[in-house]
Amino acid sequence: MGFSYTNMTSGRGFMAGPIMPVLVNLTLFSSIPRMSFGQARQAVLKDILNDTYDPKIAPNFNDNFPTKVMVQLFVLSIDSVDESAMEYSMSIYLRQKWNDHRLMWSDNANLSRIEVDTKLMERVWTPDLYFVNEKQAIMHDVTVSNKLLHLYPNGTVQSSIRISMTLSCDMYLHKYPHDEQECSVNISSYSYTADNVVFKWHSTPVIMREGMTLPRFEVEYRKKAGECEFKTVATSMISGNFSCITAEFHLTRLFGYYIAQVYLPSVLIVMLSWVSFWIDIDAIPARVSLGLLTVLTMTTQSTGARNSLPRVSYVKAIDVWMAMCLGFVFAALLEFAYVNVQNRVERRRRMSVMEGNESNGNVKEDPKFKNKEFPTEEFDILQLKQADRVLTRQVKASTCTNGGQDLESNVPDNVFNLQCCLLVCILPVIPMATQASCHVAT
Image 1 (cartoon, rainbow, N blue to C red):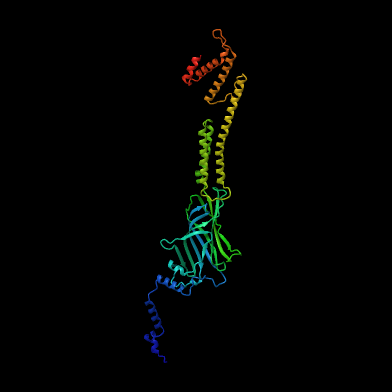
Image 2: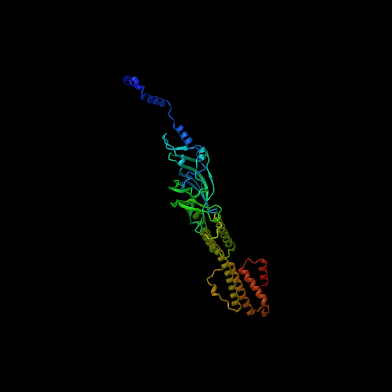
């Protein structure tokens, strides 16, 4: 092939050289429209979620090291704490983070991350995390499933799920209602042993929602999150060591409710039982009614205070308090019974002493009964009996004459007349017929 100076020096020959293909390529490239971000995300998803990706296999299943999963809990609320069932309910955001090298892509489209729709999440492998001490749980799906999944260029995967669940909590109620409880959240892998999946806490394991309160407890997370080992026993059909992590919540009971609903009413009931000490000893119906009322009220309140508690075999602090209050109330009722018996014994002894003195002809006031107050009716009856016996002895010891005749033989009639007159003078409530017979006899 010949070389001509004309081809080199002419502009046309020069342009037809190596520069022409470059211009043609630039022109063709500029004629193709640029790919949008949405189209880039779709292209990336189609590229990484291809037929070669198997979501049923762990990322490092064929390697000699496990997949490390970081876990964080965001506590929305602790809804209730049930001592009778020994459980508590809470709502959380369960957040996980792991690396899946099969989901890496080159960041040509300047995409920082890809947000996967809930309908495509099933095509991505996720850890088989479960809560060991969970009794029942639900994953919210209003209005759609409350899940999210983010993919990053380096293969990092982040997921979040909203869960409401009820967890078991071993409670020790010896000091109830002044007790403190430790309730934990235990997380483990169900099907993968520690050789394939390992759970680790995030640098901030638990985040409590600001302003979260409970009506009867003060909740505090004391940063005791750590690892635990969930090993199967040797006699189990399935053996292996499974990765496990745990977080503990410290629950301090607020006893202001119990002061207003238990302690103060029981103290008032005990003080009410002491009112019977100021009631007259002869007001038997009033004192018995008050004593029985306070005993029954105390029993009812004690039963109500224990209704929300499990039937444990040990003694609780609330049991000691209720037993003491019931003992005070019951002692007040026994005190009335004891005093009533002693009072009746004293009355019989006083009557026997007075009768003994009168039979010996020595009528004196018993110094033991001096300055003692007795019911008016009883005292009047005792005086009448004493006066009647004295007059009877005097009449029998004397003789009377009526027209020069000795009336000693008629002493019984005169004694009867004197007795009747005495009763008529002292007790005017005797029927008129009795008074008339006395006057006629006189």
